[in-house]
Amino acid sequence: MLDNRAYAFVYRTKAGFIPIATFGGNARHACTLPLMSSETADLSPAPAGLDKRDWIAGLERGVSIIEAFDDAHPRLTASQAGERTGMTRTAARRYLLTLQHMGYVASDGKLFWLTPRVLRLGQSYLDSARLPRIVQPFLQRVAAGTHEIAYLSVMDGDEVVYIARNGPNRSMSTGYVLGARVPAQVTAAGMLMLALRGEAELSEWLATRQLQVFTSYTIGSMERMKLELARIRAQGWALSEQQLDLNSRGIAVPLRDRHGTLVGALNITMPMGHESSEDAVARVLPVLRETAQAMRNLI
Image (cartoon, rainbow, N blue to C red):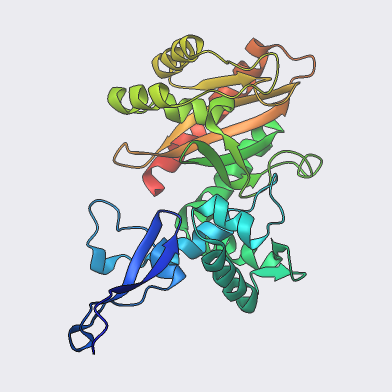
């Protein structure tokens, strides 16, 4: 006699239980659904504008695991990595173990942390990108003309990234290292690149961000930030003072290619010392502008 009861095997995910195999009362008509691994359950859909056949969700998840580590989270358990990336513990652990096998992650059996091999990823950009190599002689010119550290900065999300630098030997041990990332709102380069965005794009940015405050001088209100960005846009260059660190000043000008497209910012950082803002701008701004103009036909 056939058992008329129905059975179901389910897979548990953070979203609930997903059936993976069901059996009707008649075994001859049993139906089975594909099994789902923990990785499959965690994979994100293809982003808008990209065919799902061209989207490798596993690669996206692997990169997100690497990006889960930061100064506040230098070491993570598999569970913590899963929480920070939206994965299950099992899926996060498998990605971590794969990265460990590749040499990008180390572990003591419970905690995981990044290894210096991760720096290869950033070095690959510096070695292959044309822009950081082209600007070096020009940064050297700025450093020689101002006796300050000169940088090339670009925007990445809400942050400024320093992708090239040059400065006097006495000062090269200070300032930002290559690859350093700083909130755009507190740097001259970042505020300049924000100010030069289209009106709709800038309005969207201002409406969806919360400003961070680092010092008593940091612009912390959106109204003040709007006024400052409007002033920067009108004058075509930016000055920031004590926004991120006390006694620190930055001056930036836009770097455009031969077609007029903004590709980054040419900027310097310096201690404020006893030099007034007006004197610093008069000393540095002409050198930055002249250099940015000289670079324009080469990029």
